[in-house]
Length: 86
Image 1 (tube, one colour):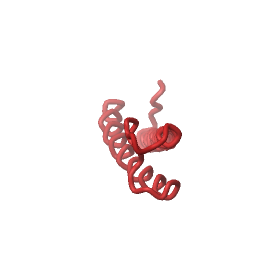
Image 2 (cartoon, helix red, strand yellow; image 1 turned 90 degrees about the vertical axis):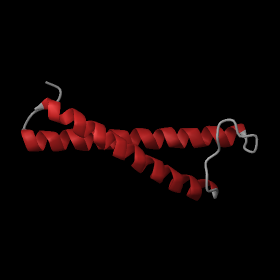
Image 3 (cartoon, one colour; image 1 turned 135 degrees about the vertical axis):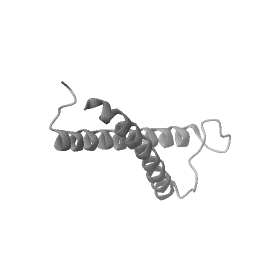
Image 4 (tube, one colour; image 1 turned 120 degrees about the vertical axis):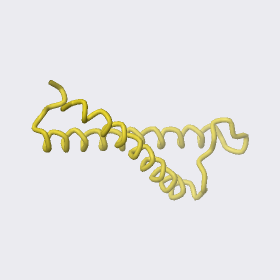
């Protein structure tokens, strides 16, 4: 049954990444008032702006990934009764 979990996990990971991207764009707009987060090589933004954007993006992606992975594991366990760590 664990073979079923792998493709579902992959799909949920992709969807989670897309969700995190959308959430980050919205968060960045609220935090900075700018439409786009600065690129690391952008001469128009300070190092502080670039690092804050990267920190927020990394934290948000990490939280979304953990939430999606957790929900997937719990759903899999509920449907199959099988624990993934066995």
